[in-house]
Amino acid sequence: MWEERVKIDPPYDFDRVLDRLSMDPLHHVTMAEREVSIPMRDGDKKPFVVKVKALGTKDAPEFLVSGSGNREAALKETMRIFQWDTSLLDVQTHFRSSNIAGIFKEHDGTPLVLEFGLYECLMKCIIHQQLNLKFAHTLTERFVHTFGEQVDGVWFYPLPEKVAALDYSDLRELQFSGRKSEYVIDTSKLIAEGKINLEELKDQPDEDILKELVKIRGVGPWTVQNLLLFGLGRPNLFPVADIGIQNAMKKHFGLDRKPTLEEMQELSREWDPYLSYASLYLWRSIE
Image (cartoon, rainbow, N blue to C red; front, top):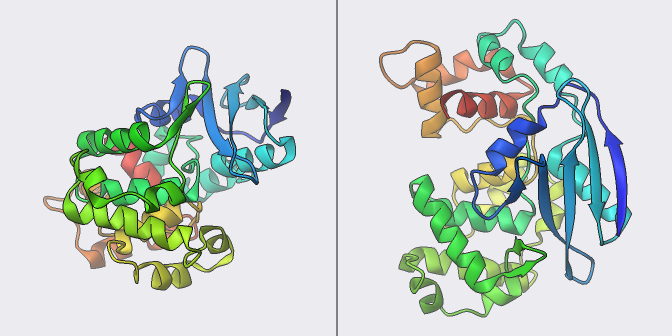
């Protein structure tokens, strides 16, 4: 077992991070201890748990990271998930005089936190498609509890090889629709067979990833944009078709209806190159 103290540049509001993570019932969050446990796998796909505990404050962020797997790889992955190498001060400064400055002041120090793995993010996106959030979480929880595994109280998504070997009826029994069962299993087969390499996506431009992944049956632009945002942490994405963002902009700008595409593009022009953070803060403003 190893542990390491990590200090990062302020602002960084980890309590807001924990609050958002706790919305997913699969996440192992302890609010009182200001701690979250992260499921990870080593090079041989063996599961292990990394714990991240907040020691500092928003204005003096410091963390205790501990785990049992490879120290260097685990720390690198933790840095990636929590985006500790991104300067939120630069983001806040960029929006200080923008047309959504008030939202950024209210949610100061809120980072873009990633899902705990690319495959997990893709499966979650597919399962959540066209469902209300409560049932989406229920369905994802059933999927992981049935086919995943638990280590030290932390749930791990099943590996793509295991999901690829399932029958559609296995998911139908969990109340998956017929099509969603096919999307989850068929996409997992493509990954298990090496026809899709999620790790290689990290080095590809957004547009190339979009063109590649929308070829997969059941994976549309909304799913890819969510993977880019919450799987890969791309900083400049603005999912204009997202109803939550449309509602947030309607509320913030005092519109009597949802904004048109042209209005969204015009109002967001000054948010570049941090459109992803604008999206995140707009979502938070109506949660």
